Image 1 (cartoon, rainbow over the protein chains, first blue to last red):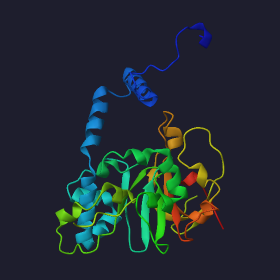
Image 2 (image 1 turned 90 degrees about the horizontal axis):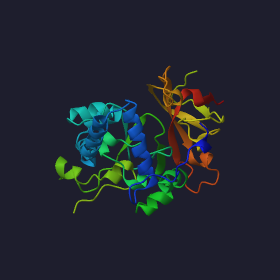
Image 3 (image 1 turned 90 degrees about the vertical axis):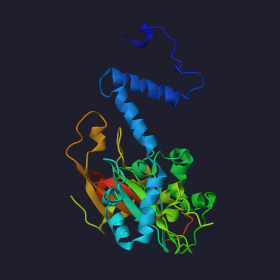
Length: 207
Length: 93
């Protein structure tokens, strides 16, 4: 059938002020369900799983790494094994690699192609992480982006922007704040923010 | 062809029709193998209903930001890392 042979309005079918992308996702879901590729239960279960994840899980890994050098070694060697050791769910796939920030090296993570993110350990990514300005500028002007997040790095700190382009997800292990020697692991974990594990800020400093 | 940690590589400058995971801004750029990852399903066929096999080796490749962006304004040591599949890598002397 040629396109001219049918007559209907081609303006998008949306609910009220729903953005076009939401209408598109809904249409795609309808089709996939109709064709038997996925079920509604799959979609619901996946959303449930995703929103049950929080940056608190990643923060527990980081805090343990701060207080236990051996654990830090295991975390940097295999984040999945380390997560399981703390009873956390690292997800089935993709693989997660933890990258350690030091006095001389600062990592920040981006996904220029879409919005790849260690969701199992950090939960859903923030909106800015998925935005075009962040995705394009993080790789071309990382120091400028970090300044906008309130983080100005000295020139002798090497910036490493990590573009997670494929099957690996990256989690930053930020530097332990100064003057936190007396704090216990749980208190330390509360200092580890989501943004510090993406690498766009430092952890909180104790009150 | 496989690559080892520390080896110099160049990202193939070829264009590609359809889904692939090699960012355009890195094509033709020279870098160094930083990590050798596992093999993964090939997204270029897997995205189109095929099984994505044979799996392709994935590498973490490091680049000097000054090489990626000739006008880069930051220090010389700043770097960029990206995961690139083996069939997008060429040896660089």
